[in-house]
Amino acid sequence: MNLHSLRALVIFSREGDRFTHRIVQRQESLDEAVGLCGVLGTSLEDWPLDPPIQQLVLEQIGSPPRTVALGVGMSGSGHWSLAAETIGGDAGIQMDWACRIHRPAERLGSSYKAFGPMNRIARAWTSQRAEWLLPNDARFVLNVAEGRIVWDEHESIVSIVPVSDIRYAGTHTWRYCLDVV
Image (cartoon, rainbow, N blue to C red):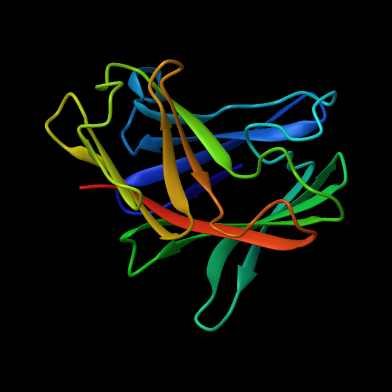
């Protein structure tokens, strides 16, 4: 299952009881793809590094119709949801996540590792934006609209986490856009 903008592509694939996703630079051959890969957890983790999406569909929504990936899943005491779509006239792919928790969470958010011949260390990053240099001098850009970026240099994992206090029950959200410029 794929969702694409002009320059970026999200590839959803089922692994075990959940979906994982890769966000890559759009090109003719995926064999040479570079990008970010979601850090998939297991069914034994209550609070996995990446949301445990177990059901996923592509729907045509709105007028004019646009393709949206809609997903839901459960893990621990969390109920997770995803709405992903291209935005801004194919300017990028927006990932909009939520998790409803009934007890304090150990962690919430989306986590990625770089793969392929791309600079594994973010070239520039703040709590709202990160960039990676691609082999063709393009840049892979992550802009956070809701939430903040946490960078684990030891594991080379970038996470987007909610800014709300996950010690309290409720619905916690985070949203970001990925693009190749």
